[in-house]
Image 1: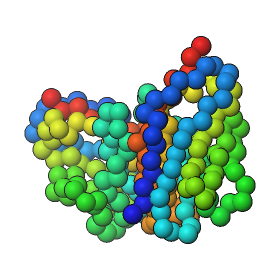
Image 2 (image 1 turned 45 degrees about the vertical axis):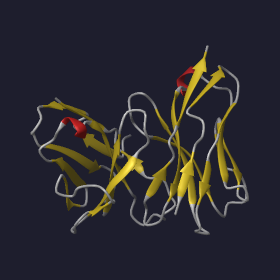
Image 3 (image 1 turned 180 degrees about the vertical axis):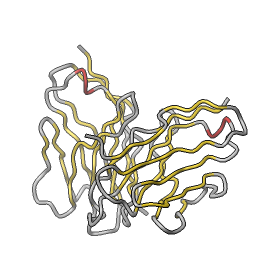
Amino acid sequence: AQKITQTQPGMFVQEKEAVTLDCTYDTSDPSYGLFWYKQPSSGEMIFLIYQGSYDQQNATEGRYSLNFQKARKSANLVISASQLGDSAMYFCAMGAGGFKTIFGAGTRLFVKA
Amino acid sequence: GAVVSQHPSWVICKSGTSVKIECRSLDFQATTMFWYRQFPKQSLMLMATSNEGSKATYEQGVEKDKFLINHASLTLSTLTVTSAHPEDSSFYICSVVEPNSYSNQPQHFGDGTRLSIL
């Protein structure tokens, strides 16, 4: 069975510092995709970054990078130079076949001024 | 601009009322849409897969007679919560898959509907 695990219910980071949000996954499929989404208090889901299981390099999108360690089945999100607007819920997710997506429990990030 | 439009964004109604939520794909025709439910401080849980022109596929534990899904056109899926009760109060969010996309590509989400049953 496929599973996404986020073990950090909440994280604090000082403005302008970097923060790592942890995500581990479990799947027996050789081909899969890993995503990170941001959900502000308003509720919309904002796609941040994607990593394919066969991608050789770690994905990067602006201040977001994904630390993909396939052997350890981890896909941690790194946010550099945190901003106050980064305060939100962050969900790690995995494509589960047939276009389905399963989500982790989420991590609430608080950015301190 | 928005790829998916979800309406209404907020609903408050009495117990026993049926509530319809619409999810529209604005940029492309979508044969597949997904409906999720999210309780406060919890993750998104997939309720069902909406398939254009055929019956929806419900996840285990989701009552199909309670949550009616209609995907009558390639741009519109509706979720009707029938005879809603307070325990149905939740955040409902839909997502759309681009045609010809691979299964490991991100979905486009609507802005969600907050449903409060009094």
